Length: 282
Image (cartoon, rainbow, N blue to C red; front, side, top):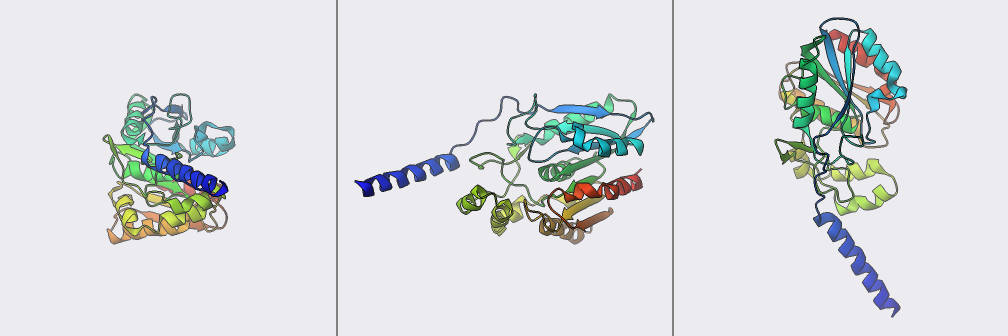
């Protein structure tokens, strides 16, 4: 009897795992929805920094803990557009097949209807999954004239869902190629060892090759900041791969990779480097 129960239990676990892998979540009823907050200074023709948070969701750049950095950008003459693309009132609940088209359209619509903004100087800035997002956006829309990506990846990963069997991003109604999550990452993921889980995902060289973000198409300068002890994923290694791709494609614009000492959020503590980079683009 005990042996039969164990066998049935194993079958149940296998069936559950198969369901999670094979069952594709439905698209959110809030698909394409966003929440935005535009901050302006008193200047005319302000360059615009569009700021995105990472995998925790919400609209990070309108939160109090980033107010000093937001105010610094305003003091340096930049307008700031904070965008929440999941886990906000009007956006999807999960980071799953987020529409790049909807984000780009929203940015451009806001910029064009705001006379204080210089629409020829729009720079995208994101951290963690937000870095992955801005690299994907800028590589597909030439109207964005530069990128700042903190603690970023060089590939697109799967959606942040239980099944993890869809892309994080959607472009022209098609999923952006992504690195899938194999079964072997379940144990480290359960333990909270995300660095190991993402490192395992990157062992799939074929998927990585297909999911690499075509950063050489970005129409402007690129600043990457990674931390050498990032506990979330191998940001420095991925950033080095990103820079190598730019170099191999003779990327014509300024591109820098700054490596700082610390964990996943450490790049935010070096925001002076970001501001200096942005000032050069005025």
